[in-house]
Amino acid sequence: MLEPFQTDTPVFKDHRGCFAPIQLYGDWVQTNISISDNIFTFRGLHFQTGEFAQRKKLTVIRGSLIDFCMDLRPETYGNVYQFYLNPGQSVFVPNHFAHGFLTLKSGTIVNYLVDAPYSKIHELSIDYRSVPDVVETIDKYMAGWEIELTISDKDIKGLTLKEYEQTIRY
Image 1 (cartoon, rainbow, N blue to C red):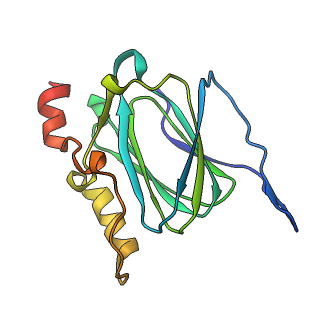
Image 2 (image 1 turned 90 degrees about the horizontal axis):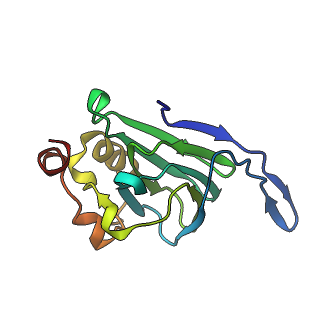
């Protein structure tokens, strides 16, 4: 089984801006662009189940973020991998992980590839507030700022870890 891992891509800059060739591997079926207007925008912790479980390759185009990958496998359940990513850096997320990220700059742009189509009925979200490692990191980066976390209603209403364990795992 694969674990999450980080890769670096060269970013070529000149007076026009920048260009980053992103190496692909695997069977990607969709590419997504995420633009977060605000610093401290949190997206996640998302995953899909069954035949729609997705592997992801996420690459920062502009800005920076902290990426979170939470292991959902029974033998390593709850382990959280964290990656600090800048432009040109990527993280690979296996399909047995819940995934999310916190932007550290306004205007952060992320491209991510997925290897299975989106399925609303197979999508689940875990409330980040029930994952101590994620809460600790978010609190660390937001300390001293008078800014609220930007997060969707859907992500706030995600399952807690305890609810996930009771309804999905067992």
